[in-house]
Length: 549
Image (tube, rainbow, N blue to C red; front, top):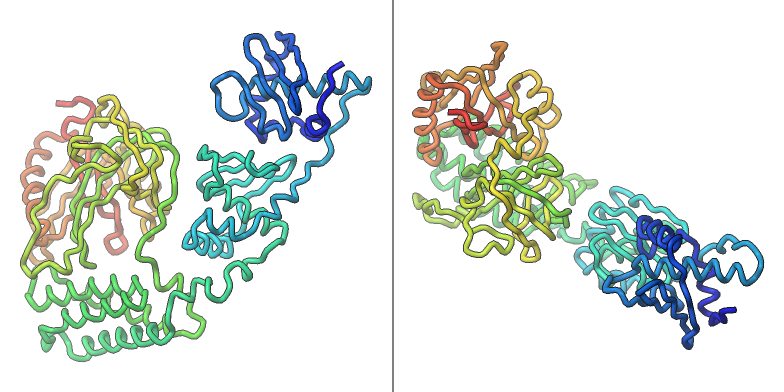
C-alpha cells in the first residue's frame, strides 16, 4: 500500500479531470489516458512527494499539483505528469475499496482575494483605466466557471486556477501577464467584489482628461472661425485664414481634442488652396469641412456631451494579434489634408484571408511652404534588418508577437518579429474567387463597408473585361477610366489631380492606352463612395496576373 502524504492525498481528491484540463489542455489529458493503457507505473514516497516511474520517465508529484516535476524536457504540465496524477487518483480509490468519488467543488475564492493594486500594476495604470472604460461600455467578456475559471478576452484566452501561479494564458506567459490580470479583474467584477464606478473613481474617469473650460473655449473659437469664413466669403478671404486654422488646431491639441485638431489642419490646407487658386480646391469640400467642424463644436459644448466619443483619440490602441502569414501586394502614397503624408502598404493575410495595412507617415504641417520631402524607400520594421519594404514583394512574411488596431492596421512594435519565407507570386496567395470579374457581386461584397467601414474592408482586386480612359476633365481636374465587366456593368477609376498626384495621373494616362489594346490585367484598388456612386482609387496594376503575357 502506498502511503501518500496528506496534503497530496487532499490535492488528488479535490482535483478532477476538469482541473487537469485547466493545468494543461484536454488534448494532453486525453493523451495521458491513452498512455496509461500501455504502461505499468510504479511509485514510492519521497518526503512530501511521490515519485512515479512511467517507463523511462520519472515524475515527482506533489501538492499543489501544478508544482509537480518530470524528467522530460517539457515545460508546464506535460502528458507524463497528467498520467501520473490520474494513476495516483485511481490507486487512492482502489486502496479505499470504494469507487472514485466525484471531486468536491473547487474553492476559487482565493482568486477574489487578489488585491486590485496588484492587478493594476500588472496591467499598467493607463491600460487599467482603458480596460475599466471598455468594460463599462462593452460589458464583461465570456466567463465560464468549473474547476477553473476561463475568460475569453478579445486578444487572449485565460484559465484561472488556484493557486494563481498555475493560471495559464494563450500568450504563454508564466508570469502574471496583463491578460491574466485583466481576466482576474473581470472575474472579480462578475462576483461583485468590485464595481466599475469604484474602480474608475472620480480621478480615473475618462472625462477627467478634459478641462471643461478648455473644451468650451476651443469649441467656441472653432464656431467663430467657421462663422467668420462663411460671413466673409472666399472672394474677401484673408491670406492669414489658413494660419488662423493652424493656430487653433494647436489650441485643440492642448485641450485634448484630436478630432477638432485634425479637422482644423484639413481646413487650413483647403483655405491655402483657395487662396492660391489651386486647381485641386473644391468649394463643396470647404463647405463640408466647415459644417462638420461647426456641428462637432456644438456637440462638444452640450452639457451631456460624450467627451470620449466626440473628442476622439490621438492614437488608436494596438492589441496583440495571432501569428500572421502576410504577403505584400500593393502600396499607395497619401497626402492628407490634415497635415500628414506617407505610404500605406497593403498585406494579404493567408490564414485569415483578409487585409492588413502598415503605414509610414510623417507630419507635413511643420514643413516650410512649398517644400516637399523627396519620396524614399522605407525600411521594413519587425526586426527585418537591412531590408526595405520594396524587397518584401513576392515573398511571404511570418509575423509573430504582432500588434494591430481593431481595423487591422499593423504596429511597428519592437516586440514584433518577422521572418521572411518562401517566394510566392500574388496570384498564388490571393484567392481567385475574390478577384472580381462580376462588378455586381463586388458591390454587394463592399456595400456594408462603403459608408464608414475601415480601409481594410474596402480593398479589392478586380479583373475588368474592358477599360476605356475618358478625356482628362480640366474643369474638375479629374482623371477617369471606366472599367467594364463582361455584362457591361461599369465602375469608374478616378484620381483627382493635385501636385502630389501628378506622377500617378501621368502613369495612368500611359497605362490606359496599353490596357485598351491589351486588356486582361488586374487592378488592386480602394473602393469609396463618390456622391452616391461607387468609385475606385488605383493602388496597383498587374498586367501579367496568373503569368499572363
